[in-house]
Length: 165
Image (cartoon, rainbow, N blue to C red):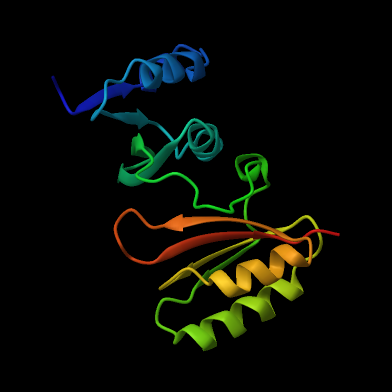
């Protein structure tokens, strides 16, 4: 059994057809341990969210010209305990922070400063070295929502914060 199932949607799109149903069927047909490699004539950004809702992480590679290779693999880990279950329906993040080079106290301080600047309903994404459990508890008590888990590659803790009214 091949570990990577390749689907080239370029011919489908060249015929003027919509490939979403074919992509989803291919993803649904994957066996455990398999991933889906998609070849497309553009970077299919809306598909990333659709596949994330279905439990897939993605890795992108520009092949040259306008062609892209996107590998979709089942997410290495589910959302961490305490994560908001509706996080897959949130809008995309409006702010992105990589705080892995900061000491935990400084990272939390910068995270809170950025979080306080976003308007209600917006989402912030942050990558930290560790889960900021006390901060997440505090934000939860204030009515805000979060979703996070350790990065599959061990690079830190991935966190989405949603500012509520």
